[in-house]
Length: 305
Image (cartoon, rainbow, N blue to C red; front, side, top):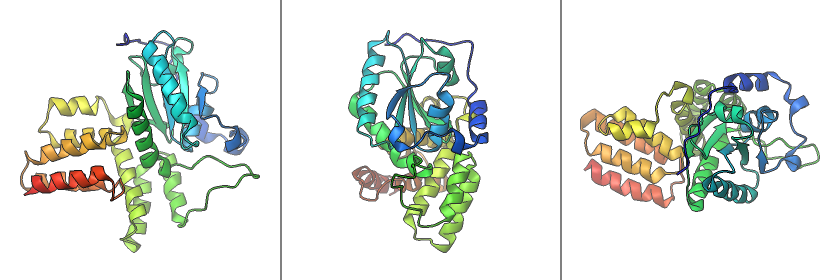
């Protein structure tokens, strides 16, 4: 186990950096294009704003805060480098050397090394500490990309490169702009407006439910680890909801589903219905054919009746 490593001075203020990044003219400061973007890079105080905060407006940025003093950290670094190399720039990985740049590590409130933090739209959305098998890390990254990447801008293209297809519905531009500004309510309202006219649009419903999840996970409104809090109070419905959200984003939807199904067995009446509705909302974040969803639906049916 890595010895906890604490930082007490020289912190970078994430909110301040994000504000500066958004205030700048991105045309003047953005990288030249996708061809010049590395899937894995070292993040320092000098490039933190461009390569971490501003890049996370485009794609998820997985930040590894580690140290060469820890074999666990070095193994995680190697695994993430491999995963990033095969990731087709659907996300990027930034490595922070906590010994060389402790002020960057402190920006994330790191208490132990290694710590992995996912950034999206300029803010942390989920994290984990310590060693994890490579396949678990891969699953965590895959879930992050599946759930978060569609809400971001995508990497900016150069004039000579073939860019992504334009959104089928131009109203999505407003929703994506709102998400990038951290205005989840505005994004959700836009998705709801589209769904009012197109109630069967599953893609928009999934985007709205993802935006709801991001809003609920807003780290600025958190004072404790949601999973730890829920495990300490297993009958508190709201705490179980928070923990399930965190587990979904952390790449462990099965744990989230099982948590809420177990909770359903302890509830009755309106509260049981409320748990069911949250489960259905989480199911909707995944493909209907996902075997994890199918298995959880069967368990939910048994818990309901």
